Length: 134
Image 1: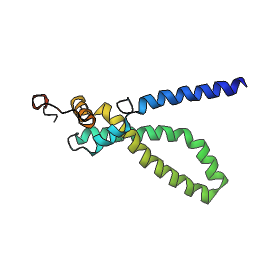
Image 2: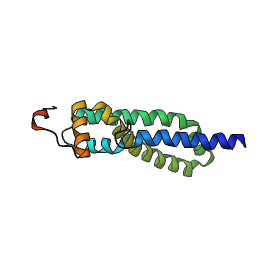
Image 3: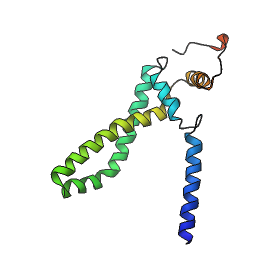
């Protein structure tokens, strides 16, 4: 009974913390990262750095999965290898893209991120406050 209560309360606390960070303006604002990836004003170097960091993060995560993947490939030689290749391909592609878009607001120039946040919130930026970001 005690474990069920701790599990339930822990899940609610974790969900509350994650929801606060993932919502608009939080530290892990995925929508802002996606908007920055699409925006032509963001330097290409910052985009590439964020995607490279995302790829590295997925590679570290994948290193922890190696024992399980080896067991699957050993248990089901042909099918296990196919499943492993498909899942790793999706993981590296989508994972690097999503993690890179979460990291991009922290890598891109701060003024540009602030301006894009203001534009997304509907706040107009004064002409004198506009500066060159490149």
